[in-house]
Image 1 (cartoon, helix red, strand yellow):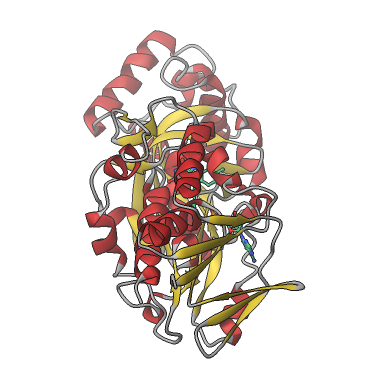
Image 2 (cartoon, protein in one colour):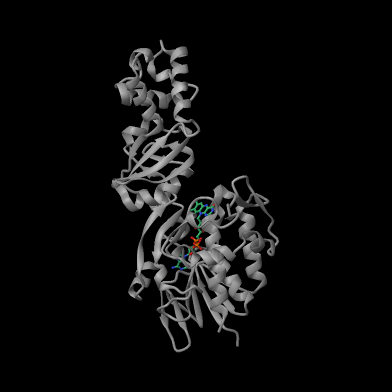
Length: 402
Ligand SMILES: Cc1cc2nc3c(=O)[nH]c(=O)nc-3n(C[C@H](O)[C@H](O)[C@H](O)COP(=O)(O)OP(=O)(O)OC[C@H]3O[C@@H](n4cnc5c(N)ncnc54)[C@H](O)[C@@H]3O)c2cc1C
């Protein structure tokens, strides 16, 4: 008789776990609460699915799971998907996408592979708990139950709850004795004082943004910064958002609006602009270097008005120095946490000390974890899906072993 493996959650890691367990000889049942599997996969990468990243970069991952490094190092998204007939292309930043540029192609490839190796998929089935039996586990889902020799939990984190991921299994796992790192929203905008950003809503600008705590800058990311009604956003901010969620109001974001200028080049640029536009309102001085509304906002912050004449406002070295400093260190306080509905991933989850290198639980033999349910999250750039596929493959393969 085949070993029976039940996988809970039909997202990225659950599909990978189900396929790996079936390919390793198990009879697999995949349980998903939504009417269809892979809802979130379709939303990834703005519908294009940034399914991985070339090479492994340890510093791009965060959490309490040192075991992840070996799993990720051995994994190649290219090799993984090419055997499913999905061709991959790499962009200039090392991000991997399906050649068709369609997230649906990734889900199709996974679904077809799962079907080919006889994974039994049961949708509209929300798992509410599990109990140990003589041989393994009974997975409970309302009035239904599913007996298995091994179980893989792949129910995801708390981010994007409209995809079925709301951390619903965490209380169950806590009761079973698991250490859970409190889930926080990550890869999301960082809320700030609305009065500081409202006038800048919709602006996108290249910048280096630093998360600054009481001991100085903790992390700096360069890229496109976006201003929204109440928050700073853009990929560079997303990559700082887990720090903002962890440290809250102790933290501030410091924006360098001239990341490609040396100090001397910035000073020269200001002198050049003053010689051309010195007679104009200060708010217009930086037009052509930065979006006009940013120039106006900076002048309002320094002089209380954007209409002061530039020459008069910046007549001595100290004032020029102040403006140059502001251009390099424009600070925004962190004002609370974004909602999970705005987040792409969850920082937190089942603590790494609860699982072995095989991703089997240290507390319950035959119970495995994978994906975002574990306390591991990555930066933007395909790192999270790389973890979902590789951890799912590891958990599923090991769960299939007797
Ligand atoms: C908008 C958006 C864009 C993203 N873009 C990217 C990207 O381009 N690249 C990247 O690397 N990452 C991206 N991510 C992150 C990535 O999608 C996730 O990290 C990844 O999907 C996590 O995989 P998972 O299997 O752990 O969880 P999920 O894919 O979230 O799947 C978990 C599944 O479990 C099901 N489930 C939950 N509870 C139960 C239950 N009790 N019973 C049964 N089923 C249950 C859920 O319905 C869900 O289908 C994005 C995320 C979002 C929200």
